[in-house]
Length: 196
Ligand code: 5GP
Image (cartoon, rainbow, N blue to C red):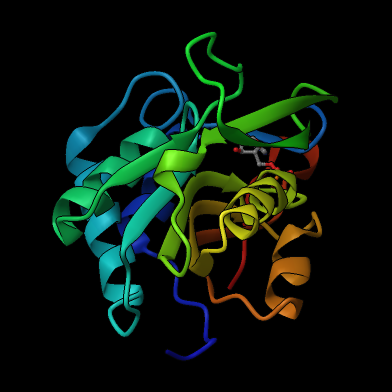
């Protein structure tokens, strides 16, 4: 798979028409990703992820609640593989689990994420899918959980990557195949600048 960036144009056009910039470099896409969901677009995005990771052996899809669940479950459906989501609150019913800390860019605080040991197995190849890649903290938390279980991240797919934050560079430098369907270079002055 080449490293060349190709935007997924239906998504880019949708962001152009419905995306809103918030202060602090946040893109709001509440009408089709983060609040209301567009299942048809989501399925198209899932197909695109499957295409981009076609050369990978994938045993399982992992995401983090809550906005990653919709794209992840559709990728899992297409691959016919299970989908596990890391939980942000430790359920009282869960004792045997892997746990790590994640710093939230949008909430400006740390929180712990956990996953039952039952659902990350040694030597599994796991694909991480999420809505946004900013500084890469959620991704680093998922890498921790997967490593704790002795499994391996075989790729990372994001609906939107913001290149003015450092997550993409960090993850690619660590050697991960990172596929972002749209990359945004800047969100200054209420203007969305897409990577060419
Ligand atoms: P990171 O962990 O890479 O710093 O940030 C990724 C997480 O923060 C994503 O799971 C997403 O929920 C949230 N996030 C980061 N930037 C944005 C943004 O611009 N818009 C929205 N809606 N969520 C974001």
